[in-house]
Length: 165
Image (cartoon, rainbow, N blue to C red):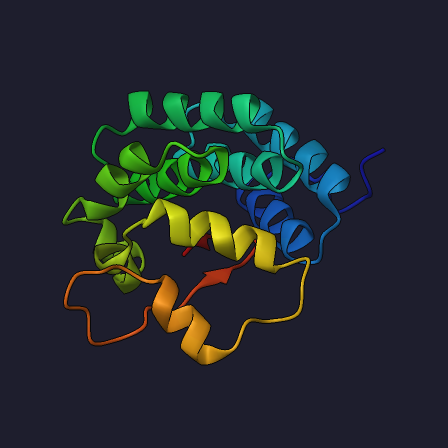
């Protein structure tokens, strides 16, 4: 059930509320608020992206991608759309497509780290299993990386907003 603030008929308020609810992990309410924002402003790209973020957080990837696809139709080439789509694609394991989304020059306007996102699948998979075990020693992490002549370690992080490794 929508609260008094959520029932206020102003899309911007609902978009902000959806984002805030997602960040505090109140995902069911965030999805509800996001749907209300989209109902009030079906042509709003920010409303669709906020809803996609909440759906992503709930692991409802098909629905999240559908919102992103509609946002892309409404605003072709929008960098925020590419970043959200890339985050969802990375989460479902479509790493090549995610890299293409993050590699768009305009994506770095949304978050500068996008240009650095690359997926070394064996390393990525190892990190996923490492989450359930004690952290590996730094020298083990170094040995798991690319055999290319890399001289640095890339930050690995996952937040409610973006999923990136």
